[in-house]
Image (tube, rainbow over all chains, first blue to last red; front, top):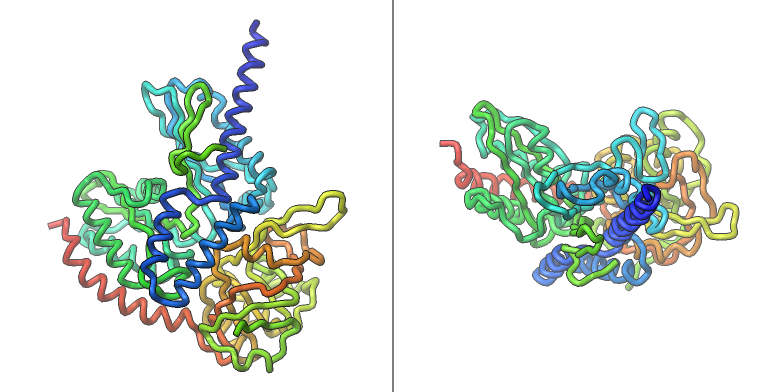
Length: 305
Length: 204
C-alpha cells in the first residue's frame, strides 16, 4: 500500500517537473503578453529611423523564434524563481528538487544555454543547475493549496547594471534618483533598452536588492500600491524616458518599458536603494499550478504548454 | 543599397564606412569572448584560429550536436554579448590578430577606438536579443576550438551569409557612436535630475 502511494506521488511529481520544464522552455521562446504589447506600443510611437529598424528586427526575431521553436535570445540566463507556495500545496516537500530537475530538463529540451558556472571551481556544470542554482526565493502562503511561480531568465547583459547603495538620509530621495539615473546612462545603456527598471527602497542593501528584483516580476503597467510611490514611479519613468536611450541605447524616443518600485519601511538612519533591470527581451513568466496539477499561464493568456 | 562586407576584409573595404552605417557580413565570423581574450593577451596562448582580415563576434551561442556525427554542431541561437567586457584586451587583440571586424553589443572604449584607428578595424553592434535572426544566417559551423571553456566561450567558426544588420559603432577613424550619444544622454540626465529633485522631497 505504502509503495503504491509513493509510486503515485512520483508520477505526479514528474508531471509537475514536466509542467515547470515546458513553461521554462516556453519563456525562452515567446515573450509574455505584457512585454509584447509594450514593445509594440513603443515601436509605434518611435520616429527615429535607426530605432524603428531595430524595433522591426525585434518583432521579426520573435516571429522566427516562435516558428522555429528556438530560444529568442541566446542568453537564456541563470534561472531565478519566486516561489509563492501554499502551505497546503501537496508537493511542497518535493518542490525544491522538482524545480531543479525542471531546469535541467528544460536545458536539454529547449535547449537552453549552459550558463551555470560553479564559483571558485570556475567550471560550467552544463545543466544550468549547481550550488544554489536555480536561485529560488521562497514565499510561504498560508491557507493555500496552490503554487504561484515566477520564472525569470536572468541574462548576463541585464544583470550587469545591478547595483545598490545605502545612503544617509541627508542625501534623501534626491540621492536615490541620482543613483538610479547614473546607472541608466552608464550600465543601462548596454543592457538592451528599452529596459524594465526595478527599484527597491528600504533599510539594508539586501532587502533593497531583493525588492528591486521582485519589482521586475510585476506586470508592466502595474503601479505600487502606495500612491506616493506610484507617482514616484511615473516621475522617474518620465525622467529616464527624457534621456532618450532608445532601443539598444542607440537613441530614440524613450528609454524604458516601465519603472517599478517595491518598498519597505526603513530604519531612520539609513535609506538603501537598489536597481535591477530587465532587458527588452524580458523573459519572465508566471504560472499558477493547482493541487490537481492543472495550471494557468498568467502572463500568456489562453496559452497551453 | 545593402552594404555587404566579405571576409577576408581589407583596409580598403572599411575606409568609407562611418559610424551609424548599417552593414552586413558574408564569409566567416568566429565567436570570441572573455576567456579567449584573456588567454591570448594575459596568458600569451596562441589563438587556435587565424583572424587576419577576419571577424569576431562577442557572443556565446546555443549550439546543438548534429545527430549521428562525432563533432558537428548546428547553430540554434546566437547573439551579441556586452562588448565592454572585452575593452581591456581589445587594442592588443586587434594588434596581435589582425582582426578587421568586431561585432558585439553596446559601445566600447578608448582602447578599442585606438586599436580601430591604428590598425584599421571597426566595431559594430548586432541588435542584441535577436538571436534567431543571427542564427539563421549561419550556414554552417565549420569548426570549434577550446571546447574546454564550455558552450558559451568555445570559439565557434561560422560561415555566414549576409549576417546583420550590423550598426557601425566605431569606425577606422576612431569615431565612437556610443561615446557621442553618451555626451547627449548625460546632458539630458542632468536636466531630468534637476526637474526630478523638485518632485521627490519626501524627507522634509
